[in-house]
Each structure stands twice: as C-alpha cells, then as structure tokens.
Length: 579
Image 1 (spheres, rainbow, N blue to C red):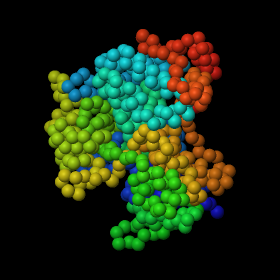
Image 2: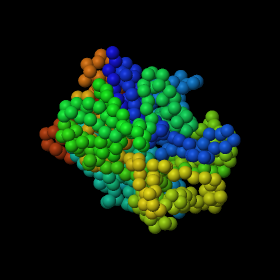
Image 3: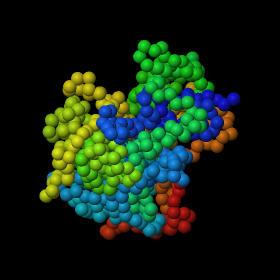
Image 4: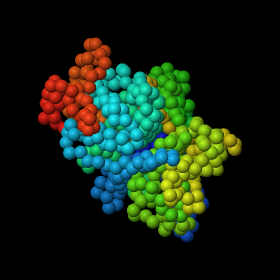
C-alpha cells in the first residue's frame, strides 16, 4: 500500500513536491487556500472584463522571470506534457533578448546579449560587458575594475569564507558603494541587483547577491546563454493549468479553497491537520503518513504552536526572516507599446518599478481577439518593489495610498522615465483599464494590507533558514525559506526546496526510489584551485581573500603572476565548468 502524503500549500513548491512524490508512487493530496493553484506564480482573469465570447483580461501577482541559470524548475517543466511540445511546458519559454535601464530625465540604456567564445574568456567577457555599459552610464573605469575585483573575490573564495564572512555583509557594504561615485551605487551596486527577484542591495547578503549576479552575467555573455526567458502566454495557460491536469492524471488529489487551519502534534509526530472548508463549515481533519509544509513563511508562522517550536528549534527561527511587499499592477492599452524585447528597470523610480510589455512574447495569441472586450492590443505588467518610500506625486508611500493613487503614481513614474524624448512613449489616452494585484487589500481609504508579501534575502539570514528535513520525523519543509543553493525567494528556490523535502521523505521511509536531482550553482572550473588554496588560508589563518586575477586596462581579466597563471592553465585543461 502506497504511503500517504499531505502537501500543505499548492504554490510552486507544493506542486513540485506533489509531482516528484507522485512519480515515485506515493499517494499525494494537496491543500491550497486559494481557488487557483500556483501561489504567487498564478495568473487569473480580471472579473467582468470579458465580452463577445472572449476570456477575461489576464492578470497576475507579478510578471514571470526564468533566468538561464535556473535548472530545477525547467527540469520539472520538461516533465509536464503540453500538446505539440516535445519538451513539455518548457517549450513555452521564449527568450527575451534585451533589457532597458530607464533613467528619469536622462539617457536610457539598452542592454543586449553578447557572446563569449572561451573558458577564461567567460569572465573577460563579463568584465568587458560591464565596462562597456558602465562607461556609457558614467561609471569611471577604475570603479568598474573595483566592482569586477569584488566579483573575482567571491569566485575565488572558498565556501567556508562565503558563509562565515560574506554571508554577514550586505551586498551594498561588500561592493563598497558608500565610498564610490553616485553612478557606481546607482548602476552597478543597486541597478544590476534590481534584476534579482526579492533582493535589495542594502539588505541582501554579499554571498547570495554576488553569486546570483554572477550567474546572470554569465548567462548574458555565454554563447547560447539565455539570461532572461518568459512564457509565451499567461502563466495559467502556458504552465499551471497543464501542470494541474498532469498531476490529476497521476492520481494526485488537488483540493482548492482548503486553507490549513491548524496542525496537530502529540509531542513526537504530526497526527493530523485541520483544513477549513468555508465559512460556517466545521474544519475537516486530514491525516497522512507524512506532511509537507509548503506554505509561505508568514502563513506557517501562524500555525506553529509552542510545542512544535520546542520540538524543532529551526521553526522558531522563522520569526526572524523578513518579508516585504512586491506586487504587480497591469495596464491594458489600446495599442501595443513593446518598449524593449525584455524587462525594463526604472532605475530612479521611487517605488523601484520594473516592467515587461507582454504582447510581443505571446506570439500565438491576439489580445483583441482572445481577451477582454476586443479593444486591448497591449499589456504592460509592472512590479512595484518599494511600498514604504513616498512617491513624488502623492507624497505618500504606496502602502498608504488608495488604489487610484497607486495607479496614478505608477503611471507617472513610468512616464518620467520613458517620456523624455521628442515623442512620448506612454500616453495616458491609451489606457483602457488597469488592475491592481488583489493581494493588496484596502480596509479603509488610506491603509492597505498585503495578503502575499515576499520573503527577502538579508545579510545573515542563512542561519535562520531551516533544512527541508526536521526533527519531527513525519514533517518536512518545502518553501522558499528552506536552505537551497539559490537562497532567494524565487520559483527556482521553491522547486529546489521541494526536491529536498521529497528526498527527506525518501530517506525517512527507506525508499529505493531515485532521489530528486539537486544542482549547485555553476562556477568556472578554472577557479577550483584558487578556492582550494583560499580554504587553507581561511581555516588556518583567517587571512583576507586574495584573488589570483586582475582587470586589465581594456576590461579583460588576466592572472596576477606566475603561480596564478599556472593554476588557471592547469584548471583550464581539466574542464571548462564544474557543476
């Protein structure tokens, strides 16, 4: 008889855990509080926006972003069948080829994908890419060299130094932004990290921020690299609905509208969970052999009793993890405004805006024919990442604004960055409708609450992140707060956490089923000897790091001396990449 597993939460982590468990013969049920599965990744229709047999206008919590370094999530997506796609829903990913860094009242820069041709050349390509761009936006060449030196230091430092030293520094502090020019802080230290989901330069750890930034830069400069991918249709259509259908076909019980109301614990094991079935309906008691907590940290914290916290001290440390608001607003236009073939970052925006123009990527769909009332030709999806800083128009933080004030302020900040040429890019007259993420609730005209805040990485937070396995033998954790190689609140991190949770169940049950694959972040093999040498320096002497490479005048990278040259030469012969 198959062992039973109750998955609490039907976001990316919960569905990923259910997928892996079902493939290994477990009897799985998933309990999700919302009416749709997918968590923050889901898309949904704007109520009442359809007519003439069309679907409602598509909306979302925030736009999707699939960097090229993601490995766990695409692996799962390839195993979700999709008609006409040999590689499943992964075949619905399309490459965005450009990024726009828009300045208010200044020149806007378009970043394009470049191509490197070698091994050590990978890093030289990254450095030259940054030098070319940094020069255009006014960062002095010597500050570019300092920035690349900071990246080189991370790459050539051992894991122990990264965790014990760099984890406890912010990326802002580590990069030396306070001591550099305004352009350095604006474009390199802060601007580049705006491309990271749920990351802030002044708060995130140097270890995580630097390593993920390097992944993105390698993707940008690598031959065939795909630094930025998006879906070719609304998320529900291109990915989540096929996923739900596939899991149902595999026998997974999917229960929507079933929030977890309580967790029962006898001092040693979880004995059951209580699931709400609606107002006025008694909670239903669910039992299983194992339980997967795939809930967001702010929800799980409310369910943790003192007994659970004592039994597993890592659960008590969840209180120290930090969440912030990062929510989306959609503008529906009567003409398509592509802006750039990728994401736009509004570098000076008070509310830290990023956006993407969707229609250009939805090649198989005609917005006016398929959605709404037949008039919409373009969709601008905007993420608002800063909700506590006053906006220039309202003088109020987004969290203190009414929906109408948020709409006006966001549109105004976009226009400030884009409408600085002879011909305006955005025109208010083109806006047919707009839709604010319904997770933002307004109990009164001047105060908002957020039902779906986002976990953010902060310096030192690794110590407060739990492992997937817990001291409670039939409870595992699968959410973006679990320790993963990604170490960010992303769909990739959620999928990796789910794999670790499933592997913990396989170990606990003595299963002979194959373990879920878990990948480390890729690093150039050429630096393996330098990392080994740094491990000795750190363990024995705690000496400062000493990268064996330096930046040349033309932006390239070269060894610092004969020993460094010999190390890189040997490593280059051993292989171009370590996984």
